[in-house]
Image (cartoon, rainbow over all chains, first blue to last red; front, side, top):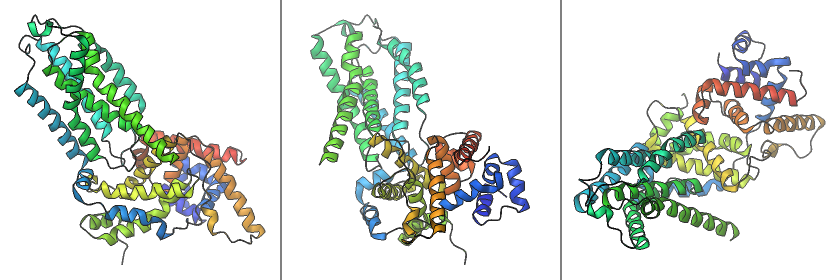
Length: 271
Length: 180
């Protein structure tokens, strides 16, 4: 006999049967339910005597929503999670391939290859983890925040190391135009390069109401994709430029999108 | 004839049989409503979460693997939607919804009043547990999930959920005034 069998026996008042008692010998939870003459078990059984009343018309909106699940939007939402992951990965690779094909950074050959590998690996792993967390389906248990703290503690020093000024000796990496002009140009370019990821997240979303943390994760993944692309696109290596023009993509869009989502929610609640 | 399993019904639905989904709805909506209604006071909000869970089940159909059990799958969806509901409202789980009382007769006899009192007491004892213990007990006792399935639903090890259940039941006995 297992726990379900014991629960059934408690509900049916058959707690003195040998298999029930034998199970309770090995199961601490069931033994608690049966302890003291089984009063806790009987009390728990009281809670399940009458099922809640279900009125069909009140569930009509769910049926209407399910029947309305048609078309391209519904198809995107309904894709299996591994397929979504593959599409996201392929999109990031396509963006990077496009940059390398049409507009690679002029100092690519002179850029230290180990450093390039480190920066791409850190950003790539981070983007992968953020995207996987973002598309984690609701039939899986939530991730522990402890993992996020450990992840940030590991990745942050590596990422900061990547911001340290690289010396390539190439003219392009040393030429410094007006700071804000180049930073804003890179911010806009990075945003455009990450926009496809944001669009895919929106298309893939199954929830009716998206939690703010998920909105923030979408923007973070978009920013990381933009940063990956900018690493292959922009030759400037000034740390301040990298902070303001590149790293800001995720931070700014996360702030804007979470703020907009929060304000919309408040407005709807107030309306 | 034996009732079709949940998985057979879901497979039939995925093959285009809408009645199979209706059967799943009839089978699980009351149970989910009871599980969600334990923490969500407003019945309209609890119903909304249950409806969302079924809509989500429909949208997640492609993720359902052969050999998996539908019951813990659906309950995990409902549980996560409930968590998101509370996060959105920045609220903690509330006192339980009195769903069980709806069918009580209006003219209550002393015996009914006594049972109602006992029910309120055990309800309070369950509600006063820490969320991680209450969640495990609700899924195990009311949801009928095995400890292994509960562990999968809450994202903890089997031994951890067993400990939580044991501690929860012990605390409930204490709050009911039983010698532990």
